[in-house]
Length: 234
Image (cartoon, rainbow, N blue to C red; front, side):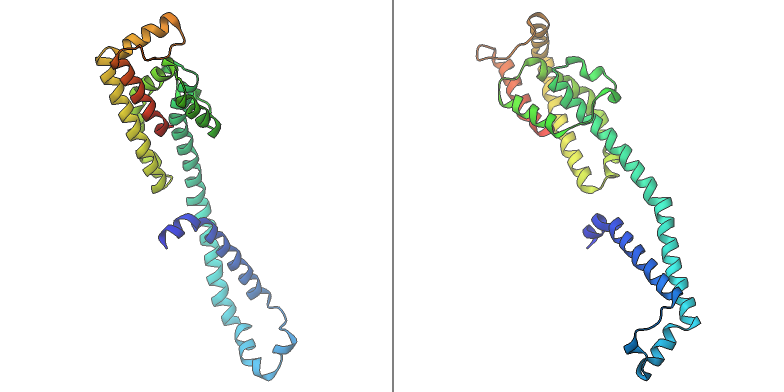
């Protein structure tokens, strides 16, 4: 029940507002009763519903409900929607940083401002997944490695922002942060072993580089580990 209310709360309140408004109009206007209700059997009920006392009690109650909804929209709903929009924009830019840096093989993507990344689109993610299934350039893997080392702390600190969007979104954000942490750890270990330095030098010297079977075991291991973790981040 609570899950349903969290999901459909605003729609349910809007419907309740509409019903309350229609009832208030009916109470205040006092429309003429249908012909079949003009008999003596309905007189008591008609007198009750058309009495000034009923109009005051029901009218004041419905007016209070309508006023409460308007107050809710102005004071709570509009600020919450605005805050959620900003939260989505921030979280989107963090994920977009990973996706775009990988897509463009931009090794220095982590040095860019979050505002410089484009809005994340499903097509970008699908394109990156296809790239990961084939031969992936070293520069793309370096880009995601450097980006993860740089963004991990920000993603961890952004959990409270994700909570503004709800528990399911926060849980997804925790999973993304966990994957970024894994890539960060793998990248730091590769950096200590000299793998990132060798691959960076190869990219600076040759340009488009892929790790083949002739590469050393450490390079191949880093290559496979980063590729296996990256789809779950995207």
